[in-house]
Image (cartoon, rainbow, N blue to C red; front, side, top):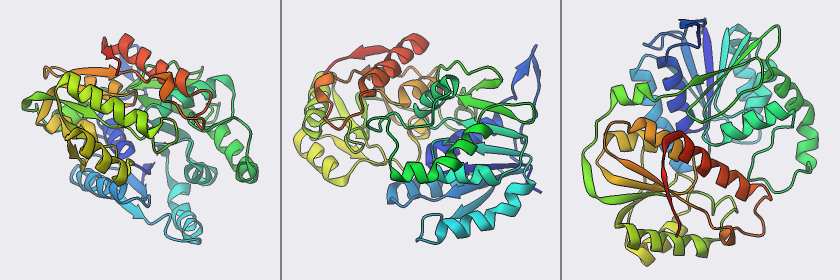
Length: 358
């Protein structure tokens, strides 16, 4: 019987499941109040709800290899392989979900995960980092709001939202701690969880023990973002900003986000001459494995919180590049600028990061 079942839909989520399993449990007066799946990951089954884009699938397959090497059982589900795939996936997973003692999820906003939560009978629920979305999740949980991704424009529910509303409501109840079940958030983000939710810090202990320290290069590296692809930032403004940052800070390599389009990256290379790197693993592992620049620049994103932890003690400086409000598109959510500013401000406060403008 699988004591713990984890659902992941991205490489970063799978990385953070491994970090969660490796980390000590939540402490009460210095004593763990909950046992992990043990450091060899015995008793942990990771269910990969495979996405469709090739970059994510490739990184997930590499992460799945690392998880198997560490002792976890990995179950790969072609969860989006056609109209009937979700029904087959849910039906096939139901017996496992009924037996699981603990459920670990990486994306509480995922409709797929929300549907699976309605089937699960586990007493304990863990939410591991899915990047900056974790900050928004905790904020909405605290405020009693419905779960909506920060970059979605407006707050009115669409037709699909209304159809799925009963499932979302049921999932939100499962994500709210109660007398019959506990909720833990495992995060590298600076968050304050609502009453009843246990917060455990992700210090990237597994990553630091497994990889590095890296060899440092003379040039700087720039971390890409999918803000253009999500409709938040104007493409032309983004290319201009990357060019200015590269020239000013001696950037030689551009680490592409797995969701960045090939056309944008081609245009970026043509304009700046930067070496475009398509990582085959999450950036925290790539940077820790090295080589990596002595300075890593990034727009507001998850990595401004995770890289300082993964690269602690290596001599690498992480710098945040502010998003100019003029770069935002008309399609950007009214919450976009405030959320991005909050990510930058929190990183500056938590890790003492410097900020620059383009």
